[in-house]
Image 1 (cartoon, rainbow, N blue to C red):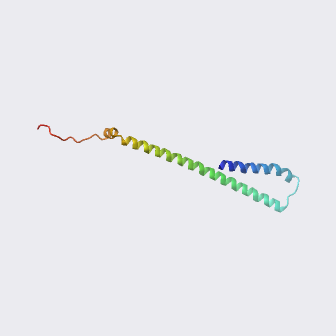
Image 2: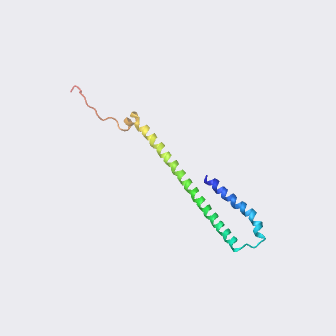
Image 3: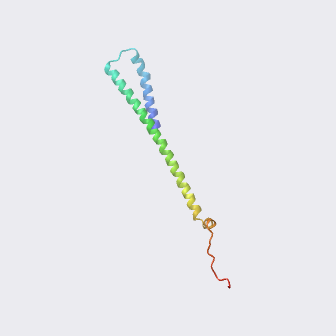
Length: 103
C-alpha cells in the first residue's frame, strides 16, 4: 500500500513537471506562484521522506514478525521433543534401583 502511495506521488510529480515545465519556461512567474511552487516542492519532499520512513518501518516490522514466527516454531518443536518420554529417559535414565535380592 505504501509503495502504491509512493508511486502515485511520483506520478503526480512527473505529470505536473511535464505539463508545467513548458508553461513556466516561457513566462515569468509572479512571486505568489513561485512561493506556491516552493511550498509544493517542500511538501513533496516531506511526503517522500515520510514514505521512505514508513517503508523502512514496514520492512523492520515484517522482519520482526518473521523472527517471532521462527522462535515460536522452534519452541513448539522443543516442546514436542521434550514431551516424548523416550527422549526424556535417554537424557536422564532412571537411577532408582530398589528391591529384594535374596540377601
